[in-house]
Length: 84
Image (cartoon, rainbow, N blue to C red; front, side, top):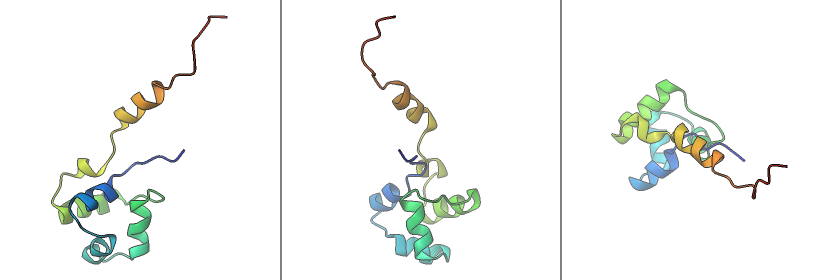
């Protein structure tokens, strides 16, 4: 299962902005922004800062919480433990 590190696609959708708009704002290739939105690649911290500024959001809103991910992974039930 892939790790969804960033929430870029969600934030763009919430603001009704497109990958192409962001690519133009940042001067990046649209294919690169697409990879960020699908979490197949991640932007650098410097680029993430620029993205947050373009979207006028706190940089933390562009990232998924690692705490939430750990809770989800540890709460998977594998059946009843019999202690055998």
